[in-house]
Structures are given as C-alpha cells and as structure tokens.
Length: 191
Length: 105
Image 1 (cartoon, rainbow over the protein chains, first blue to last red):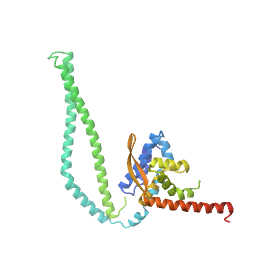
Image 2 (tube, chains in turn green, purple):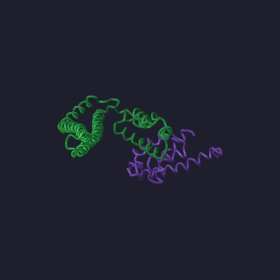
Image 3 (tube, helix red, strand yellow):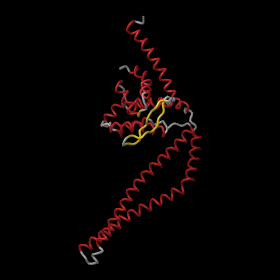
Image 4 (tube, rainbow over the protein chains, first blue to last red):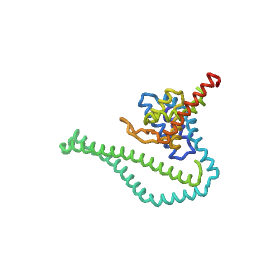
C-alpha cells in the first residue's frame, strides 16, 4: 500500500471525529512517512510497519465513545439554527470582499493570457522582419526580445495565479469544514 | 509475543523513551519497535492519549533541511506517573518470577 492509499483509508476510517482532529492525526502519519522516506525506506515498507489504517483509526475513535454516547440525543434543530446563523454571518462579512477578489482574480487571468497572446504576436512579427526585412530591420531584434519578455511574464503570472487559486480553494474548503464542525458540535451531532 | 503483554507495558515504555530526552514521533516509534515487535501505527494513538491525560506535551522544532518536526516531551505529571509505573513494574515482575520459577514459595 502506498502513502496516498494509507492516508485515504485512515481518513475514511476516522470519520466521526471532527475535521480538526482528523487533520491533526493525519499530519502525524504524514510526518512519519516523510521521515521514513528520508531514511531511505519505501512507502510500501513504511505502511507495512505501521499496520492496518482501519485498526489504527479504531484506537482513535474507540477513545471517543463517551462523546458518541452523549450525542445519542442530538439536537438537529439547534444544529440548523447555528448553521443558519453562521451562513448569515459569513455572507455579511465575506460577500463583498470575496466578490471584489473574484473580479480581480478574473481580470488577472485575462491579463496573463492576453500578455502571452500579444507577446507571441509581437515576437513573431519581429522574427518575420528579420527574415523578410521589409520594414526597418534594426527594430526587429527589439520586437522579438520585447515579445518574448511579454510571453514569459504572462506564463509567470499564470503559474503564480494557478498556485494562488489552489491555495484559495484549500483555504475556502478548510473554512467551510470548520463552520460545519461548529454547527455539528452545537447540536451534538456526529459526522 | 503475547499481545496482552505488550498492551500492558506500552504506555510505560513510551513514557520512558520520552523521559530519556525529547524526541519526534518517528524516532520514538523506531526505538520501541526495535525492541518490541509491534504495529508501529498503534503508538501514535497512544501518544495522543498521553497528551490528553497531561503526561506529555508537543512542540514543533526545525529539522536540518526539512519541514519542522513534532517533538514530544514529558510533563512533571508524566514523570511522576512514570516513576510510579516503574516501581510497580519492578515489584510486579519480581513477584511474577517468584510464581513462575519457584511456584510462589
């Protein structure tokens, strides 16, 4: 079993714990894999010595039986009231800033692609001037240089934007899960 | 080895390793599994339990050329409970030996 499969199985078997607890536990095993790999072991070797993820998970969830007992009478109404409140607060606080950020994000993507396209055209124009020197050929090398620079800038922006987008998606997911946890806990409802 | 034996002494063993000096999870697990054959993954739940019981704490420390590692250290309560466990163990194992090898006489 490789690391990814081990972590997925562990995560699945831990459902019932809160999002934060699961993340904390998974982080311990990720560190274990990381150091094991540094010491020259393979993912398969490490997961064999760790043992079955399902049984490991049982050790964590077993300790939570007291809480599971207490949530035998979950208060769903309370959970939904808290959820509605959280949604209201989130919409009030985040709607305008997020909408603004979304348009900035969208504009930056447009600019990046435009830079690649325009830069490419300028660079090609420069090259054509070199081979067919109809126009002032002295200008041609500068056009190519300028065009290539613009394309590089565009590609650089696309890479950075892609990375930022991934980060933002991760942050939003974390925040949503965190809010769901709050609502669940308020109602004493287990996942 | 009998799994019940291992379960009974694992808490004490983990506390003892940490008592020798703060260490990160992988190192601790390696030291235990070098001496006792065990599914290594079962030590992390134990570490978490010891934390909630207030016997050990964690902190992050930089490692050479890698992301920071989580280190475990003993609390005064952990040290106290380890001392008690050790004393009990010495007493207990001596008595078990007396029964095993001398029929309890």
